[in-house]
Each structure stands twice: as structure tokens, then as C-alpha cells.
Length: 304
Image (cartoon, rainbow, N blue to C red; front, side, top):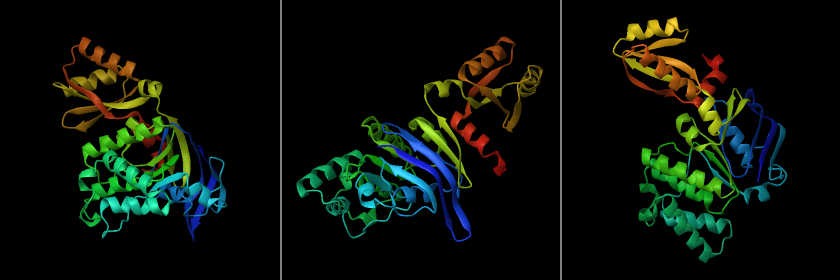
């Protein structure tokens, strides 16, 4: 079930929140929607979720128009907003059963699906606790389970990793990859670029309400894209001089570290070999910025 967005625009009074965003998200893939605060990500997701009407442009979800066919679209999507509200008096299990009832899912199937989802998001041990006792991260996991109750073909996730601890973020990454492997279309908005690079198949970079760039994040991109590397040396001045002599753009970043931009992993490996060969005493050499981060910063350079 493909998501297609063409030239979508949405304003709130004098504030233009979305100004001509276009993107495509395909089944079997995780598509990342990234951009600074106020770039229109949430507004776009709300339009995809049938909760806002675009002023102009076209949106299609599996060929369906969210404006004129909202009920058909809602039956196919799972929506997880950034601000997840819940019914505090209900237990975690009751929250999911209530959502299942709203989708008119048969009670027996609803109970089976609820148990499976609670295990997937690691909330089965809290199933009979009131929702009000959940932490922010636990509520996020409940929000993801709620978005999956109707077994949607399309997932729209707005900052799903917000408030999650490191282990929960790793588990979320595995869940999203598993959903994509099932053939679902996953569109996820986040500002945690390093994690998106690990989970996403492609990224759509937006700023000031416009889509600036769509970048594939396949294995070839990971190997060939430009990324930042930090070098630590016992002789920082000697390192700086060597880089200047070899016309390698570099800058000091504090603590004796030097940062360089290198196009591709092969060139990064060659640079390290050349440094060692020429007697530069390197004690540390690691990525400081992933390829997706570099692409994002380049696309939003005018925000400086």
C-alpha cells in the first residue's frame, strides 16, 4: 500500500505549515521523514491520518483519498501521534481492547491480538496496571501497540522513540524492520538521525514546509556517502599539518580531536592507512556523524 503525496500545502491563518511537500513511501520499506522543528512533519502526518484537510495538492494511500474516503483510509492505517493520550483509569490491556472494539474486531480475536501486541512491545508484565502509572517511555510503547491493533497496512509514526530508553529504542528498531518485512508501509518522523539511518530504507528531508531531498539509505549509500570522522592523535599539530599538506579539509573540535569529511568508507580506510604510514600517531579514529546526518545538515545549511 503506497503513500503518495504531491505538492501538498496547508496553512493555519497566516502561518504556512506545509508548502509543497511531495514524497512516496513504498510497501516493505521504512521511510524516514526528517527535518527541524516547525518544518511541517507533524502537519503532514495529520493530513495523511485524515485528521487535517490539505489546502491544495493530492494525497493517496493505496489509491484512496483521505479527504473524500476517510473511513476506508482509517481502516488501513495505524496512527501514533507524538503526544500520546490515553485513558488513565483503564488498564493497559483494557486500552487495547477498547481500541479493538472501536474497530469492531471480534472479542476473541481482540484478546489474542492484544496479548500478542503487549508481548511485542514488552508491556505484558504491566497488562493489568492502570495506564496512569506508566512512564513516558512505557506510554510510547503502548501507543505503538495501539497503532497496530487493527493490523494496518500503513503505519504513520510521529516521534515514536521519544522518551524511550536505549534498550526500548533498539527494540523499536527491530519491530519496525519486522513490520516492513511483512510488507507494511512505515512512515516515521524523528529527529534521532543516527537511529533512523539504522532502521530506514530511505529518508525524505523537509524544511520550511518543503521536501528538499529524498535519499536512499541502502548498503551502497552507507559505503559511498560522505560522513564526518574524528581523529585523535598524540601529536594534534602534526596531524593538522599533515592534513593541510594533503589537502584534506579539517577542523579542530576540542579535546585534541580533529574532524574531517570523507567520501565513502573506502576513502576513510585509505586515509587512516596513509596517516599511520607517514608516522602520524593516531589513537582514535571513528565516525562522528553518520551519512544521513551529513546529508541533513547539507540540505538545511541555510538555517545557520
